[in-house]
Amino acid sequence: MNAIVTELSPKSPRETTARGSIDDTKAPAADTRKFRRRSYLALARTAVIVGGIGLAVVVPLGWGQWVAGFTNQSTDNAYLRADIAPISAQVAGTIRRVAVHDFERVHKGDLLAEIDASEYQAKVTRASAAVAAGEAAIRNVDSRLRLQQRLIAQAEAGISAIAADRDRAQAEHARQTALTRDGWSTNQRLEEALAGIKRFEAQLTEKRADAAATREEVSVLGTQREQAEADLASRKAELALAEIELARTRIAAPSDGVVNSSSVRTGQYVSPGMRVISVVPLPNVYVVANYKETQLGKVRVGQAVSIAVDMFPGETLYGRVERISPASGSEFALLPPDNATGNFTKVAQRIAVRIALTDVPDGLKDLLRPGMSVLSTIHTDQMADATGR
Image 1 (cartoon, one colour):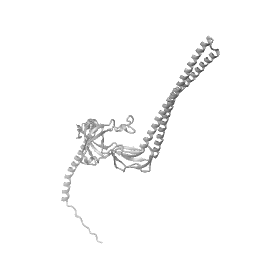
Image 2 (image 1 turned 180 degrees about the vertical axis):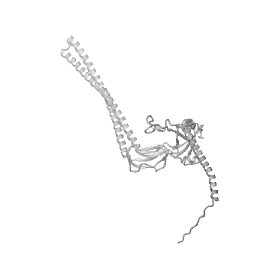
Image 3 (image 1 turned 90 degrees about the horizontal axis):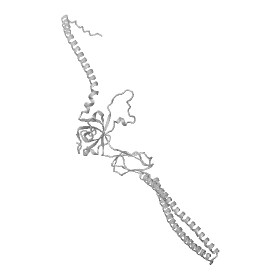
Image 4 (image 1 turned 120 degrees about the vertical axis):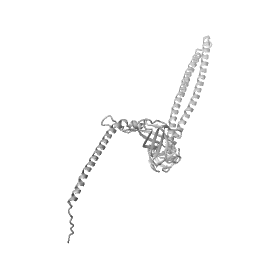
């Protein structure tokens, strides 16, 4: 195999000298550019450092005042909310039926679910019978009181009869005393008259004691009647409780709205406090916006708010500041922060602002849902009018 060899001719001295002259001319220019670049980089680095130090000093001192001075305060840490009512079982039992479908619209008082009521119906029947027995006991006491009144009248009549006999015996004794003194009667008849007086006096004492006992029985019966009335009131309270428990076997909607998916099914056993379903009171929604504390310097109740819902770009809703939270969110945490010990890093706190919607387009009223993300902007230089604009 023959290799192809190409011979490179050596450069001429003139050509070499010319190229060397050009390279010598370019070298100082390149060094100058490199030096300038280094200078610019050093200057930029110095400017960044100085700017960073300036921001580190100026921002903590004046950033809050600068932000607080804005006329329009905005935050995207805001969401639609509603007063959702979680419905729980109040009595234990087996679900007889679920009367609504998931996400169905309901009205106040509509049946949502029903618990088997046979046990509670039996309790109502038993309590009703106890109430009837209590009422009968009172009627019995009243009858005995009427009887005692007749017995008292009878005892008083007996006392009057014996008193009359005693009076007659006393008159006879006086007559026999006079006759015996004049010799027209004997001492035996006088003694018989005196014995009659004593006998009638004894009978009179006995009858008076019987009458007193009869009157005392009236007081006893009055106390028994009070006890029977108290017992009847207790039984009526038990009946009311039984009826309340019976009514609670029917779980009804507390307000108009839309239900979520049911947490129970037919045949499932539930206990008191167990979640059954929730009712979302649509379309009654509002906005809760969590603003930084540095943004609330000019925010007041009644100011106008414009709201943009992420789900509906290009649509603007209007509202007004309704209420401002009494404390930051961290104060309501399960474990509030305690900065008294250890290292400390200052963090801007968030304070919730409740915003009422005052002007919602008709086409969006039935489409807004709690939990949707929104962008709220409070116009601190405007108070909301009747339309919220």
